[in-house]
Amino acid sequence: MSELEAVLSKNPDAAFRTYDGVATVVLPGRAEVDVINEVGTVIWQQIDGRRTLSQILQAVMDEFDIGPDEARQDLLDFVGELRRHGMVID
Image 1 (spheres, rainbow, N blue to C red):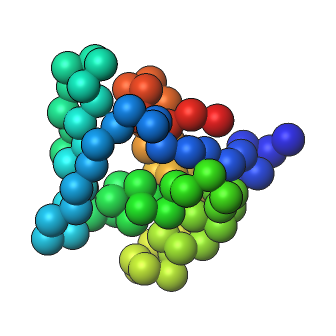
Image 2: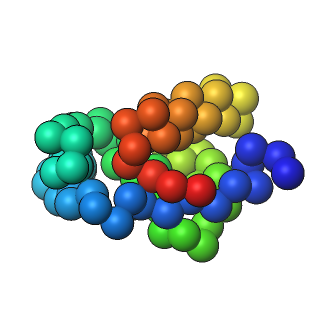
């Protein structure tokens, strides 16, 4: 399976709120708070346990003026960070 075919879900323990285009995610079990920039927030909002990363990539390209190669790499890097911080599950 290609990385872009992966479907992610938010960690059910994560609490989050979006304000003024920026998401704040709290992981109580890890005593961790993460603030996500505007692009990351679009990605975060698209992660719903149904959309593939390919679909999320398309949403990012639709929302921002960014080329497919750069968008793909940024998405995969960001998702890697979300995984490392335990914010998403496969």
